[in-house]
Amino acid sequence: MRESGTAPVSCIIGAGPSGISMAKRLKDFGLPYDQFEASDDIGGNWYYKNPNGMSACYQSLHIDTSKYRLAYEDFPVPDDWPDFPHHSELLQYFRDYVDHFGLREGIEFETRVERAERLDDGRWAVTLSTGETREYDALIVANGHHWDPRTPEYPGHFDGHQTHSHAYSDPFEPYDYRGKRVMVVGGGNSAMDISSELSQRPLAAKLFISMRRGVWVLGKYANGQPADKAVLPSWMPSKLGRKLAQRMIKKQLGRMEDYGLPKPDHEPLEGHPSVSGEFLTRVGCGDITPKGAIDRLDGDGVIFADGSREQVDAIIWATGYNISFPFFTDPALQADENNAFPLYKRMVKPGYENLFFLGLAQPLPTLVNFAEQQSKLVAAALRGDYAFPGREEMERVIKADEAIHLGHFYASKRHTIQVDFNTYVRDLAKEVERGRRRPQQTASPPP
View 1 (spheres, rainbow, N blue to C red):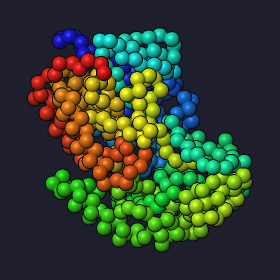
View 2 (view 1 turned 90 degrees about the vertical axis):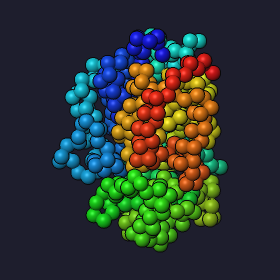
View 3 (view 1 turned 90 degrees about the horizontal axis):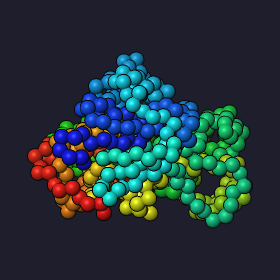
């Protein structure tokens, strides 16, 4: 940071829901910043057909978080919204937020960060797509991770159409799925949504879904209310609350194998839950045919681990994303081969206390205002009202926090950045207060 009495200048990468909430926080505190967005508008992943090519939004997408859990603190969602709004409604909400708080003029659109390099004094040199390089006291990475699709490799070859769910738009373009035999690969929300959509006749002639392992598919509603409205009392131990929730889920849903799906090898909430209001119905109606793990590709078809073969015309890989930051050349600022990227309070790598990752998590149940909560610590640190602990303590806390948030999940690249929103936010508020009382550390030298 700069000398006492001089406000540090920050760079915000991205103008999606995380970047705009960070910009508002800095503006509220009079902290100077530049904000860069590769696209021609705000919204990030929620900007359908985003010209920057990094949005995974498809035409029929509705958010799986209810409107009761996704609003910014000081900007309520419209009263007439449905419980689970369409992506176009969410994008308009973000646009209204930006315009209401006067943030748009602070965003440099169609400007991509090509390189971010730490200088000898610990500050950051940021090179832009314009060719210009600017220097900053702090760097805030808020461009998310749903943009670098991960596609598995299998023996053999496939002659038909294949794409990642990231590039899926609708049933008709850029590929026409009508009358085709289609296989969706994956067990997450996108796999559930896309297979449910394409399986409705007269779209795909036949719809298969291949899942390497069984998952629990939860409904959007429970007891007549959006399921995410249920919040456990803050005094209840998380382990007990999870046990009670698991019992309720199994009572309401029954066994996944009774729907014809692979039997999960874990309890509900021990994996990132897949949420769909219609997937189980489509399976039960015979519109979706579940298949197990893929063994190999076979020209115009796929051979599965059980030895069966299906002829298919198209494959949609709904197989998740890599965590990557192409503008960093420092290998310490990249996830490892297992997609693990441990951070202090899911925001800061020890030794890089002027580099903040915002919204880089899979919080349950909500992501939209997750970074808004994180921005409170960032702003406090930039103002000099918060001090980080020493490096050894940061490393200890990272391990302890990951045990809390990840310890009950099965090992998977899908589960490296999970957090429980309510537990995280309560702890973050306490950490901000601890940091206010903590003596300022001598700035860490660049690793």
